[in-house]
Image (tube, helix red, strand yellow):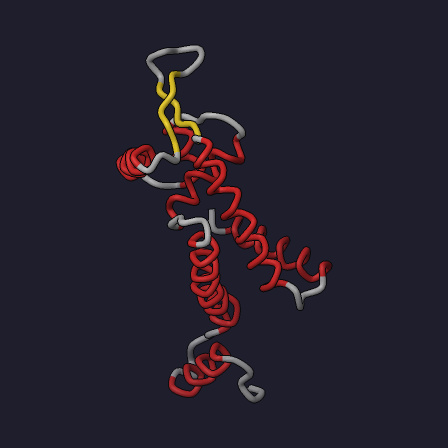
Length: 162
């Protein structure tokens, strides 16, 4: 193996030295993805903090903002991939913070939907702008065609994991 260029190269080299029988090739991609995910989580949390939001708040507020109108708790669960109990707690906390409100559904008054307040819209928009700026900085040295190819490869991997 060539001289290690990053931590993952070094880790793979170490494993190959102590376990030459093991095919460590999945680490080449997936360990890098894990490390990138951790770093990206920190970058995103910093961007959300500029709007005074936690990542979990961003998830709910962003789902509502993208929808352009109220969503049911079930719709929010589908978009954020959390349990119903977790979503109930998140909605309660966001209502208490003044970022969302519960509203009656238009066709069925028994159904309570979740809608952004003006403060919620303002905060999620500030967070989005900070996020996009931070993510553009991360990608600035990668040509657009390489970014598109990477996005396609990640889509293939994500589909394979379903």
